[in-house]
Image (cartoon, rainbow, N blue to C red; front, side, top):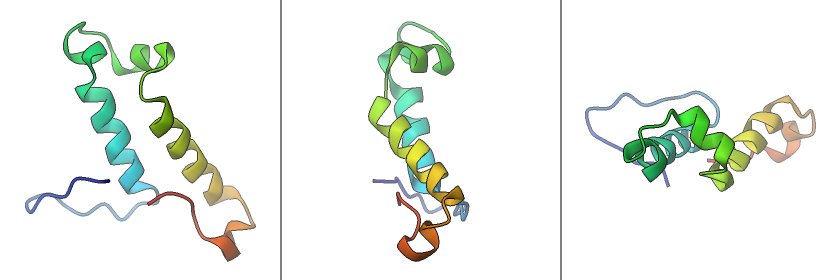
Length: 75
């Protein structure tokens, strides 16, 4: 679930919750922290794959005309 802080501004963009979790997963992963790699390199290695897929599905549902009835995927 997304992490909420009192001093942080609320992000009203679509898929904001998944975006925040995906970013936190990448930046806190051992690949970035201990090995000092770029987050894009860690993505290519397959880290945080579930959140990456969820973020993709959320963004894709914004373009899907059927989502007018079903609503966007994600949180």
